Length: 342
Image (cartoon, rainbow, N blue to C red):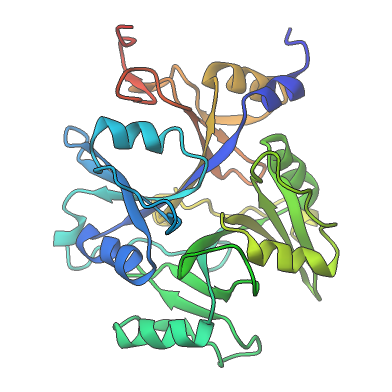
């Protein structure tokens, strides 16, 4: 019997480290995020036996340029200990050779995943530059009811929201990765779930038939955020360097027992895959989750890759649980079948 699972959970120092999207062609997608949206390729992991590669991109402050080489042990150690959040792009080999192949970008009936977002100083100038570079848009800044924000399409058709950051925000990059949006069925279940994983509710907004909740992993020792319902909360969120998890609740879904969102991992809906967190001890984190009744997609001892896990949030979204700093000298956060030699 675990003393207090909530306390044990908290002790694992959860930090949101990734949002995973599957991509058809890295030669198109990496330049989109790197050259147009200013991200840095932090690391690349290759799994030729399993026929896929992983690319990890992040917004890196100009004041601390990234000097490591993707694919090296130094880059691996940085990736699996970093405080920030990456976009993890998964490339399954040969999809790029199939003309007809498409991932499912979300935003159709009952889809859970909505978009990723980037903040910038000037949405109009940013969108003009993106358009000049050949990017197409779901919505330009002056279209629709909501002026001053835009939705661009990435090469796979995922929606990328372009937002204005707060004036005077201490952010020195042109763009910063600022959101992952997921739709939730019941905020009374989802908000406490993510708060247990060390996230802070930094803003909530209630509109006609929907509500938005924004959660963040705030750096320790910073000033306390304003009341999430206050006017200041919106400016606070727009001034953050790191991203928020935007949870969208369409009112009434919670009252329908049959309602469920697609998670992005169904055979005909594969696109968005999961979000992932670093923790100090995967085993302890998972025991605490188990004690709190959290569902599992994969326990640490299951499958080929031991030592990492996938839990499921109240909507069934997959959440990867990854060992901070990994298990060996190369910072590998899993081992295959037999445990690693010390």
